[in-house]
Image (cartoon, rainbow, N blue to C red):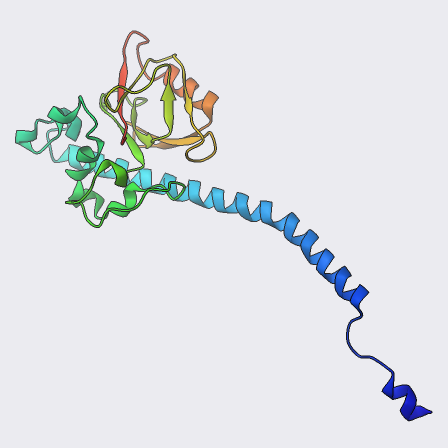
Length: 218
């Protein structure tokens, strides 16, 4: 009898027990996946902020070596990009700061689908995630110096130039950071803005009769 009892005993899972375990694992996965996705987005946002901080530092170092003027306010003959401030040549404003930026990788937001340029010589708009504030000036610390390319205004960009008015409409598309974005200001800080936060920041960026021009990497 003892040997017969041992012969019919089972040490593995029953089908019901296995199904219960699979169901529990599925529930746990469903609960964890949103948290993991949120953590990934947060990490991308942090890395994007760090990229912009390095870009802003590059602007300030370049400015210090060039009569306290940014590339956008310095003629090409003097090593700047002033003549490229009326068209879709955003990459050029970063390209002249290759020594200060060190690597093109800094110009790609982790939340963007764009690819990193092999080097600064081959840099194009398609290898850039950030806009450049063509009217940025250290004398006006709240002006937009750079930021995520998914920024929008009251009107569509013209030839790669988006025009914003202090106190006017502004926001973000879903292209990056889910209707949010990061902005580097002329004072050297980098801010994370929602749509309303961006409009509030723009409101205090200068005289409402002025127009700020942003070069988008289109």
